[in-house]
Length: 289
Image 1 (cartoon, one colour):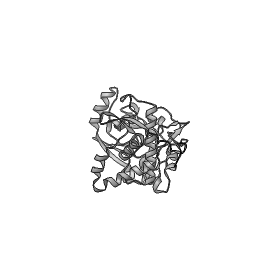
Image 2: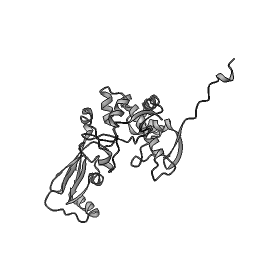
Image 3: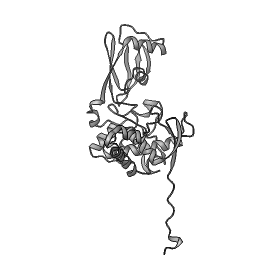
Image 4: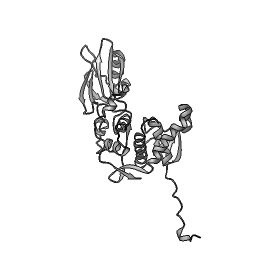
């Protein structure tokens, strides 16, 4: 028989986090929420090490937001609006949309989350702001150039060659000059649209992102033109014709932190998840949550 002193201690209750999903505040185990964010944010057939890196970034981001609440969903760490926080998958809906292999694909994501269970990135002992995006331009963007406030570990790093080789890395958008003039003048009535070039990049970052741009003689952040014209990123060049402006765009997203397609490229080159995370969040430490 076993004495009372040798009995195993009860298993700890799983850590839970509040999230706003489909408009309702729910409380979910951290690891379930991590898997659901990973499934929504990264294709399930990406290399396992890329999925692990995404799981750690997602878990870290959730805990960072829990420690630094944002307005819009008081009492909850994150919401499922990607423009505000991040996407959160509904497992049943996602696996159904994937078809016959849906359950197997979702298990790949869950396996990546389990393999990194409890691991987060920290900066000076606290959860890091582990933001991520789909694809960087020539390099990632620093937090300072994208958002105006420096973060020591959110600095520009070069994009892996394998990422720049993707067909989707470059995209094009054509905008009618009359539409651009009407929309931009509504915000900036002092703009003058004459016969000269309407758009001139004023400052470009090391990663290729347009930090400021002159439009009709008015200097604005590159992100403003990205939003106004529906561009995938703020890394763009503009070619002006008689009636149209053709934007050539590189990358997809705000460009800060981990590039998901860059993580795929690094994993395909043999990098494990820890190396991928160290590349995109230099100076952070992989720690237990």
